[in-house]
Length: 305
Image (cartoon, rainbow, N blue to C red; front, side, top):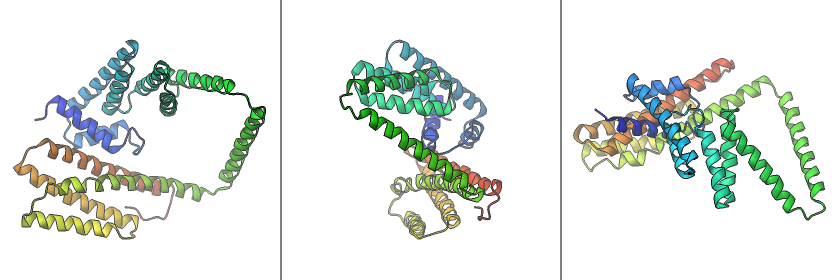
């Protein structure tokens, strides 16, 4: 039986692998809970993991108060990997980057602060730390521009810039208004399809690691040949459905290899690979559901997976 630390590490690895924080996959907290339980986590384990996330967030806030900004960044990231839906951690990261920029006079941190604040406000529009960061960055940018203001044509350049932005916005609105409902539906489906393709790539990235487990035995050579065959088929120009079917087949072969090796050897490498593969397979299942739901919701005639 896994210790609680091992449960935490596997959960964080799974969240990272699925790309939840980067927005590569859009799932609810309940869906993540179901996936985690599919990976062997109990209901009590889940509650403990959520509690641990709250404790990491509190620790990150303490690091901020004690001006340990790098520790704040790391601990807030841990809180997010434990619970991607926790509120406040992203804002703490944005503020940490800002204070690092000020204390170390390094503008690269300023760019990171702005980027993180924007990400935060997309998810948490009322986060005070993120709002403060955006206001500070905006003020600093204006002051910096004033210091450099030696070109008499700068005002004209700014006006032209505003006009160009306004023109682009007008053209964008015109074309959006003129687009048909069908085009918008197809666009939504294309976005979901990209997420599914990304999930495929995550699974394919595990192939070299799983292949490294194979020996020169006849049985292992057979598995190696099966992998090579599926991969060669995936190289062809395929429909999304054919590609999905092959990915399911690929996942099955990878799972068989890891399972067979686990019967004879108990190692952290195998445990990690099992978690990564199950995470990849669950993400493919989730994106398949999103793809089929998009077809149903938008009344498209596209073939479901």
